[in-house]
Length: 172
Image 1 (cartoon, rainbow, N blue to C red):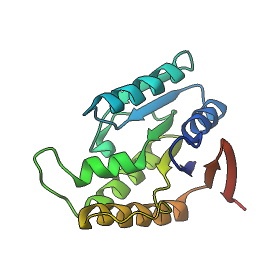
Image 2: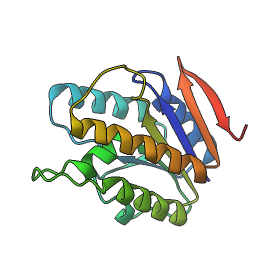
Image 3: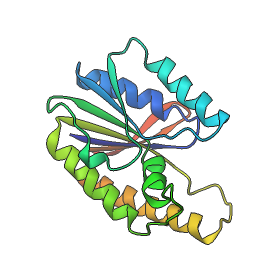
C-alpha cells in the first residue's frame, strides 16, 4: 500500500503520518531524508526524533538515493519528506543542479513500494503561499507538484492534513 499525505508547514501532517504507520504495522521504519545545515533544522529534526520515541520506529538517515536503502520487506516505511528528498536530489552538495531529480525520486519511490509492505510519504503544500521565487526554486516547486500528481495516481490513499485533520481525496 502507498499513502501520500500532504499539508502545509505545522499542519499536523507528520503526526498524522506517524499515527497511520502505527495503525498499519508493528515493523516501522522512518526514512529520514533531512540534512542538518543550521540550528533551525537541527531543532526540527530533534523535535521529530523526540515525538517518535517509544513508538517502535527504526530510523534510517539517508538524504538521497533512497531506492538503494536496505529495508525489511514486511515493514511500513515512513518517508519524510518528499520536498526535502527532492531538494537533496536536485541541489547536490557539490553545487550541481540536477533538473531530472524528479524522475529519480519517482523511480526510487517505486523501487521502495515494490520491496516493502507499506509506504507512507509526507509532503509539503508549498503551492498557495503567493510568493515569487527565483527560477531554480520555481523549478523545484513545479517538479514537486508533478511528483504529487504522479504519486497520487499510483497511491492507494491520498490525503491533505489541515489544522491536524485529515481530508481524504483517494479513495473518495
